[in-house]
Image (cartoon, rainbow, N blue to C red):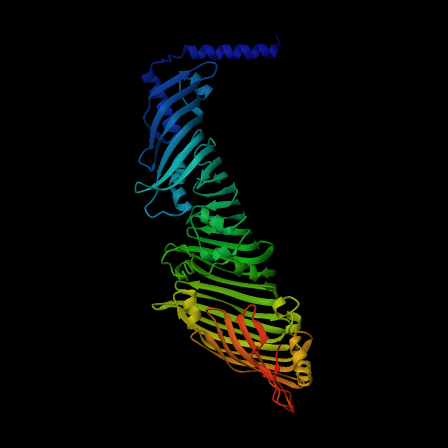
Length: 585
């Protein structure tokens, strides 16, 4: 045996001898007295009852209590554990005292009383954090396969399941360190927390990793004169609506955002969080700026300004469900209270934006939401050599939702726009559109059916693909039959195209619409239904000189209408003699 091995063996023998010299009694009552007192001192929990206490001194001292009930003295924490295991510190034990460097709570069920009306995660965690901060120090506490019940006035507010946490050993004024895993609302998560308990300034950090969230925060916390935490915040989620739903928040506007990530310098106070140097990513689009999140009277508020290079506005709009789910019996098609449940004052400017295929430049947009009021719009944007503006305002009234819509397009080059918008690929020219609508209703069909307003359209120097109206008129005068059986080809140049319409009770009526070009003129009259999105119009094509008339119909859905020659029309060329009409087909 080597000298080192001999020293180790002799030391173990001496320690065992010292333990044997102590007047340890294995009487259950005395074991309970020493062990329970030591556990209470190192955990802050009063043992209210147990079934059995066991102690073993060899090969290493260890203590086990079975079916233990406990409660925080005068506090909000109580519960019961299947077993509490404690590992005594060796040196105090040699002196006849019981102290622990590790305490295991096996399969505990812990009840935490939270303040009435507490709904958020921050409120729920306040009570256990206050309890831990109130300890002058604690042994290393390990919770295995536990459950934590948050109760408000006896009712369960939320449950943490599969709790496996380690609270590191600490002395008075040292920070609280917690790490491990738990399951909340069906989602497993890994957590790490460093929380200062001293009255001064101390480092704090938090990380949470789950299938819905990756969160990290590293900074400092000051408790006086009010708790203020500052540091670097990083957050990422695959889908923002799912993440907010995990926390019990379901803002309807959040459905517009999919994958989301954010980094920022954060300054956090009670019910207020200011974020500077923000870098936010909405899917692949990056926005930089500053944000502020507050909570007042239980109502969240978001404000700030963001700027970036690109933003897909069309993708954001397409994800939002305007109407209520059809499965909701008796629910209004416009659930306006959920659209205005949060206060928002957000300004966003980007160098380029996409809107359902259209490309916009130098875009400034905004979103303003208050109780009973929703407003959004494009303050400015350039597009295809022209400009775009728009505003949507909706307000709650006793009779329903009052909706106002104003839009304007000026000097738009339709030939350029057609490269990005297939529905405009047959049309070229330069012009603009002005639209103003005002409606009132409780559902989307009601609002569309109540719209009143006006619209004007003006184009110049363009072409219309798929038709050659000038050629059609010339061929129809010479030989109508064959000409009218094959007229969907070529292109029609026009000098001007204009239309003005009046909208009343959801029905658009064309009062003056015409297209003029070399040798022809086409007039258009009829109606368009906004609720059903259908057209019922008639067009008349005629030469600038002559008596020939070609009637057309324009009917069907607005997105894909049918443009046809009237089947019942009969033709007679100018100057023809005789009574036989020429059929269309």
